[in-house]
Every structure is written in structure tokens, then in C-alpha cells.
Amino acid sequence: MIIVMAMGATEQEAANVRDQLHQYNLTPHDNYGTQRVVIAVLGDVAPVRDLLMGKLSVMPGVESVTPITRPFKLTSRESHPEDTVIEVLGTKVGNGSLTIMAGPCSIEGRDMMIETAQAVAKAGATILRGGAFKPRTSPYAFQGLGIEGLTYLAEASKVTGLPTITEVMEPSQVEVVAKHSDILQVGTRNMQNYSLLTAVGKAGRPVMLKRGYGATIEEWLMAAEYIVSSGNPHVILCERGIRTFETYTRNTLDLTAVPLLHHLTHLPVVVDPSHATGKRWLVKPMALAAVAAGADGIMVEVHPDPDQARSDGEQSLTFDQFADMAGALYKIHEEVRTLSKDPFAMAGPIKVDGASKH
Ligand code: PEP
Ligand code: MN
Image (cartoon, rainbow, N blue to C red):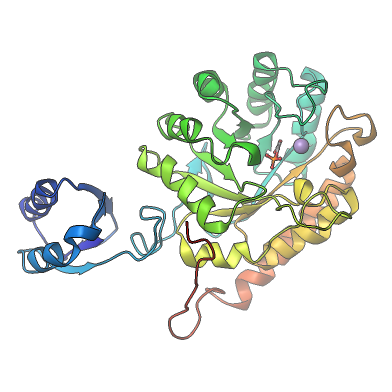
């Protein structure tokens, strides 16, 4: 349920609404828009919905009371109609600009990290990526440089001025990763690691939540809800492919997620064509398609010598390939923006049914 306070409603009137909710053991969550206060109601509303709607809708200062039909509340567009814009070191994500996150799959050393950072910065990247704690399928594969890698990432950020993103795999690592990196990444394998989601929700850094490779869009948004309800509204969603019966690609890139998410949620949406395809030559066409579909940005893997990479070389771009792709992405982005002011606005209400019922 969301309560929209009237323009000019007093702070006391909003406080009375919050008190009313507390009486029913519900938790108010304020969203301050540019014009008015919107109070989202968290908790088990169902048993008291009708009673509460009747009481709240006649309270002074209340403009409207609307039930939120989605199971995800704070991440839902219903509760927060404006897009969420996330700002890191002066770079904005979700404000209509194109975000390009680029860098190596794994940070392999200081020199390669700085060299890659300089190359991607020159070619138009806006955020630097690099994995220090690596979730590898095999326990015998390179697991990343850990904290040493984080220091190289931070140094590369200083050299280039680019904000950084890196993966955090467990709650005990959150503090150290947040100390060295501007954005925390939760990987596909951890999308439903609820203790990690709660921990990154309290870390005071923006979080990019990758879609679980077997997760529905609704499960993904419920995972984002854990982060936001833990106190962190700065969440970026990243579609990185899901597992299907197809074997030519590493995963199947679900690009319908982009317009669907823009409809369902106010959070920015980024697409990772590297992990989605697993093949270098498929990265550029899928990145272009993602931007054409309205993605707020993309994340791609870039390596000075992909064939020698310690992880994901097959899908990593060379510096030249990245520069070529980034130029094309900016062109497509400019086109998409001029095609329509709001490519997602459609005449009339859109009905979107969730698939999962559990
Ligand atoms: C990554 O981005 O480094 C990564 C491991 O991605 P994913 O979690 O999507 O597999
Ligand atoms: Mn990788």
C-alpha cells in the first residue's frame, strides 16, 4: 500500500499517518519526491487492508491510498514513479545517459589493471570493473587476488578518475570491498544469498545486483527488495543471461527484461553481454541490442591480451574491439534517445503478469 500525501501536507499530518501504521504493526517507509511525500507501507497489510484504507484515506493531508499489487514494494514503480538515479564520483547511472562499465574479468596484477583502466577510460568507459574475489565453478581455477587486487583497482581509479565496481561474495568481505570500491557487485550465483543482500543493504555503497542464472524477474526484484528494505535505495539491476537448453552461447540473454523492468521498477537496468554470450564476437551485437532496447548501460569484459586471460578470455574484448564497440554504442544511444522521449511509454495501462506464483 502507498499513501500519497497532498502537496502542502504538513509534517504533523505525515507523522499522524505513520502513527496510524505503527498501531497496526506496519512499517512506514518515506519516499521524498520533488513535489510530495509518498509513504510506502511495509509488513503484512493483507489482513487489515480494507479497514486501513478506509481510515487512512480520510486523514487530513492524505491525497490518495493505493494498494501495491506487486509482491516487491519498495522496488516497484507503483511506490516510486520516478526513475532512481545513482551517482558515484560525479557519474550518474539511470539519468538517461549511457553507462559503460568495462575492465578485466579478474584483476591479474597492477600493471594490467592500470593499462586496461587507461585504455577503457580513453575509449569512453564511465565505470571501471575488475574482479578481486572470483566466484569460480571449479575450486582449482584462479580465485582472484583478493584484497591485493582491490588495491590495484583503487589505484587504477585514481589514475583514471573512473569510479569502480567489483564483486563481493560474502558478508564478511563487505566492509573491505566497500572500503576500496565505489559500487558493490552481487554476482549471479549469490542473487538469493539473503544474508549477503542484507549486508550490502547496510554498506552505504550503491549495489549492482546481477540476475540469478535461474531466476525469474520477480525473484530478482524480490532479491533487490532485500537490499532496499535493508536501507539502501541505490540498486542497479544487471541482466547477464539465464540458463536455457541452448548450448551455443554460455547463457541466453533475456533482453525482454530491459523494457519489462523499466515498467515494473524505478531502478536502473544494465546488461552484461559478456557473461550472457561467452563469446567475444557476440558481445558487440548484443550490447548494441541492449542499448537499443533501452538499457541504462552495459558491463563488458576487456583484457590487454584476452587469449592469455586467467578467466573468461573467450568473452573478453581487446582494447581496439572495446573502443570500436563503445563508439557504436554512443551512436545507438543517441539515436534511441531521439526516437522517442520515453520509448517505454505506451498508450493505456500495460498489463504485465508475473510468472512465478511462489
Ligand atoms: C563477473 O561479472 O565477474 C561475474 C562473475 O559475473 P556473473 O556473476 O554474472 O557470472
Ligand atoms: Mn567474468
